[in-house]
Length: 215
Length: 298
Image 1 (cartoon, rainbow over the protein chains, first blue to last red):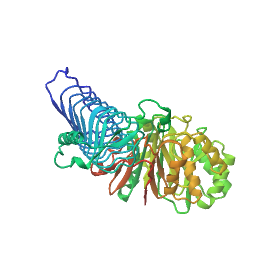
Image 2 (tube, chains in turn yellow, purple):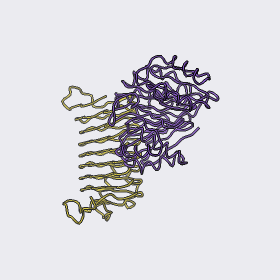
Image 3 (cartoon, chains in turn cyan, green):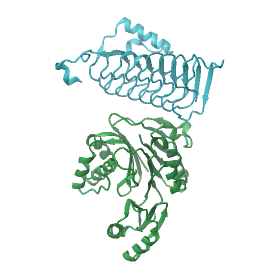
Image 4 (cartoon, rainbow over the protein chains, first blue to last red):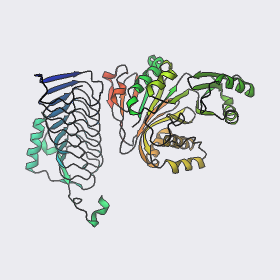
């Protein structure tokens, strides 16, 4: 199922189509080459995990951990994504046309995640850096224990997690968001000023007894 | 991990295929739990008859002799169908309780896995595909059913420790996860008169629902309150005489995916378990939300 494809692999093929994936796990995991991969159907767990350079299009839904620990490249899910989409991802763009489930962008470390639907509870949990954008609503405890990273949500936020606060949307952020929308093909379809920005209050960086209750 | 699956058929055309589809769904989940497997199937009702599914802890083979003795003692015709290590007794509903009492007294090796007008439960230790084959689950028609492949975490790998668990008439439950307050809750349930036969945490969950139903709650209410009263990780799939329900813990720790078409509603731990279902490509596929009971009824 196209795994661990390295740039040293002896082939000139630069594009692949994966047919009838039938929800199989670990498709296109560990690719380390600038390939184009199109997967025609729903995938199981960890699709595109650790991706480096490749552009992976999933014409269906994705199971848990799509794009987990992605380093660079693009993963485009045309349907919905299950839990932990883009977990610990360091770079690249994870674009989800539908909804993402719980813990989207958990512990993200530099990737950009754009979800055109909504995101589930505990999204952005412990995010360290990177950008997470939701066109729709966000579930409970958004950005719980977030270190850094920027979260932009257009819809309703069920609740904010520990140490996550709403922050001002300045011109710098509007420009950043616009660039992300452009990469997601939505540059002039969605108005950046409709989003609200969330991030860390930075109270839990270092232990202080007065904040003990917030952990 | 454990793998769980459920299929609720809306369209009678698919009913002859219940066992076959459920066995195929379970086959894909084998990797999630190789310790044991179990199937609860809601099959055709015989007028005025109650079904008791039996298994023997001593691997009894002579179920026919048991049936003969039971018929003579109760003075009524009792029919018995054996299937691999289990047997389904069909008794006049008015005699179901006497039948239970007789078995308790005279057949100490027998465990009653289920009682109901429709429900039959088949579960055994071993690799899930083998279990399905041994019971010939694929040949059983019905309206709805649930299934489990077990990766044991909370109790021993035994036939009676396999899922599904049934603690009330035509009621059953499978579980993926683990409960942390099952010991105290088991004591509480026993005090409240609920029979809990094993040390398995899942039986406590089934017993909890049975108690709440006994107290007059609807299944939806009982599922809702279990979010507060059961501590731990869980995705439950429950069966009732006419219905099929799903509940996940508030963190939604365990995976769950559902598919709905005009013909059925299906649940599985993983999408690949649903790919054997007819029309799955055009089904509405979704994830049940945490702490939210879902329920379908005939």
